[in-house]
Image (cartoon, rainbow, N blue to C red; front, side, top):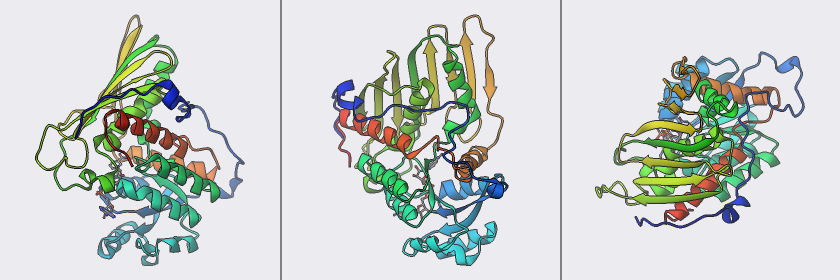
Length: 373
Ligand code: NAD
């Protein structure tokens, strides 16, 4: 894959990428608050795709959640679905496949779908769910192109259904503590951010098939660093520049990048340097350096054990390890969306938020000389 550099300026992207990422810790807008009839009700999720993230994290999380329950399954494998249905008390009448998915429309007990399919299927299954009258919680990355992201937002708007992208770190208390410290000016002026997220991928993963994945590690795990730089600073980049390479010519990287590093500059003047890879286990971490001191989230994006530490002149050090264990982050995510639905609140990790990352990833790929959808 070619390594090339191109320049993307404020003029190129300022218009394309909206501003306004909101990560305030305060309450969100109620469009028209529902009455107490919904109080105590649990939102029924149809799980679309019974893979690792669904079976290993999101569905167990629903068991420990307050406002969410698994009410239906959508799978191409009837045997697996029946076994899973028995475990979760889902009636066999609430098992669907990818062909009869639209029949969820007739099931009033299904409020929302949770989409955990390969990335290239996110747009189709979001749009079909919205047309069937269901709210959508869609896994990251939102989809594989800016155009798809826009059509997902449009479909949910037209159907008057909510759309959330599963950015669990945006709801995770340790990450929010870091947002708070930066917002309160504890680090002084933010100067430099460093972040990495990568792992050494096994061959034969759908993640290496560009048709299914849309891209390589940037779309899969680099997106955490990109999103974190945006929510930690509360700023939208004005300039991005990317560099990619393939080191291992072992058949894994014929379609997607192996390594990608990119830089971003922000309106305040802060700069970020991020790295993602499918060729090495970098862990997922983030360091923010300000004029008065720094903070480190290491790990920053893990399912559990996220750890915040600080080194700030004149301040006692913060040592804040995440208290909850996996799958608590997924329970919070499911319950936040459930409450958005129950209380008719605006969604923090909205479709528009997912679209911003799609636009920046597209810009980074273009800068690195990688063709996008
Ligand atoms: P997975 O491969 O374990 O599961 C994918 C599911 O999609 C399987 O049930 C599979 O049967 C089904 N599927 C349907 N059509 C398919 C096709 N043509 N090819 C392959 N699978 C097909 O994947 P996963 O790790 O669970 O990832 C699913 C989604 O969740 C991805 O978008 C990924 O980025 C996201 N994810 C999010 C997190 C997070 O922390 N939020 C973590 C891991 C994955």
